[in-house]
Image (cartoon, rainbow, N blue to C red; front, side, top):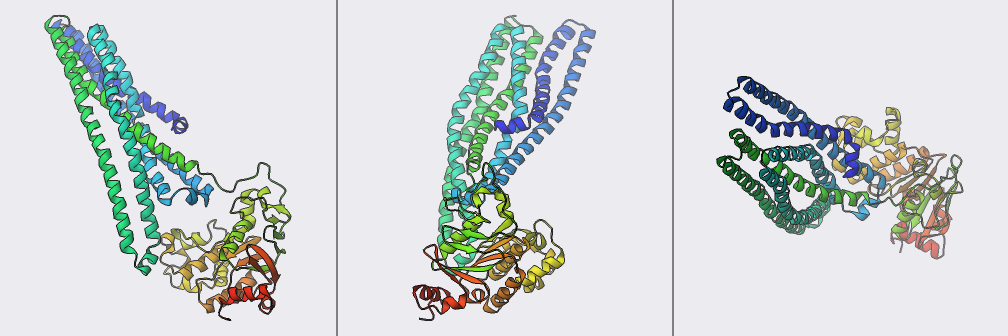
Amino acid sequence: MWWLARRQRRTLAAGVVWGTAWMGSQALLPFALGRAVDDGISGADMAALALWVGVMALLGLVQAGAGIMRHRAAVWNWVQAALTASQVVGHHVTRVGAAMPERLPTGEVVSTVASDAVRLGDVYDIVARFAGAVVSYAVVAALLLRTSVTLGLLVLLGVPAVAALLGFVVRPLHARQKAQREVAGRLTTLGADTVAGLRVLRGVGGEREFLRRYTAQSQEVRRAGVGVAGVQATLDSLQVLLPGAFVVLVTWLGARFAIDGRIGPGDLVALYGYAIFLVLPLRTATEMLEKYVRARVAAERIVAVLQVRPSVVDPAVPGASPRPSPDLEDPRSGLRVPAGAFVAVVGTDPADGAALADRLGRLSPDDGTSPLLGGVPLPDLAVQEVRRRVVVADSDPRLFTGRLRRELDPDARRSDTELLDAVRTASALDVLEGLPRGLDDEVTERGRSFSGGQRQRLALVRALLADAETLVLVEPTSAVDAHTEAAVAANLREARRGRTTVVVTSSPLLLDRVDEVAVLVGGVVVAQAPHRELLHRDDDVGRAYRRTVTRGEDE
């Protein structure tokens, strides 16, 4: 919160100036009115009356102009703080990458941007009014001390006392709002997970079970909301009751002083004005407390997101870059991929192949046995260089909302001819033909309008257009039919000729097109040879390979 305040200190300072002028001019109006009564009316001095009426008119103009500028500054500060907080969270989530969903649920991150950032902005909205409330409170207290020490001390000490009483209600509000925020985040997570797996739920008939869970979680959020509302209602009522009671006390005491002759008629009129005005700074102070509590809860949730650190970071001093088109080696598994080779990896356990792909792309933390790119350990290179030179396309392709052209070529570096060449390589022309606007058609959220095979082929197009020195594909054809898979296998070899390609797959159609196949058993390469040679091996490795590739159908 302090970091945000420093970033927008100029606009906050402007808001404080205008807020002080706005509320200060209101605080001085009763004083000018009292002087007009005493000096002009009671003293029968028309010049004094005209003077003080002019002062009141000027204060009214200042109040109107400063009020407009204060409101503009308040809205600007609110928007700037909320937007900056959202951007900081968004950029941080992008930098952290895969480590974020491992530490925090998706719904928690979404709630942070959608709700917490807005609540954080609220406190910067009210800063200008609160500053004005503090200054005007001091002005009124000083004017009352000038009129009556008793009344002045009553205001000087009474206003903080009322604010302190309201502070006792704010404390439980903070705890309940924090609890409500947590259960609301869990509800958002449950909703996001349910929507993401809706097709699967329908396939297995699990809608009722998840509806029951969502209903139960919704009721928990409702109960938490009712708990917050009870304290909030108490605070709202006290915001009216306590300042009102205080104003009644000040007014009554001032009337007694006027009857006793201790203050004049003008002072009494001014006192009534002060009493009515004091409601505003009192309510502003309590509103500031309330919004600060909300913002504090929101800031804690935002900090929780920002505390998630990426699993992969740049080295303190990056090493020398490998030569172009380098060899790729993984000492942990024993995999060796010569520059320009087309190699497949077949694991008896699919998780081993996926883990190897993550290591080759430096998507997982360094465990001391990191892959080598041209003899240089990947952790010694800047993350951006590794991402540029080694591209990993995993088995769960993610498509985002927007034009398909931008989805396939985010940097807009490729011509239509290059885009279509990659589409042909991925055997995805039928996908384009089914779209009214072709490459300019809009992709729905997560590409839900496409089938699994279509999404997979579009993701392959995106990976090919990256044109990386080394491309690592994880099960790129697991969701397509055999005819399409054969076409992709043939096209892929030709499109990647002369560049290093590693395919983690157990598809015979793909394996028959590669230079060599590395067989992973227990995460270690036990053999690396052509596909047909491995099929005809009459040993444990050959039998394990055949079982994996043919899925046991040869037995």
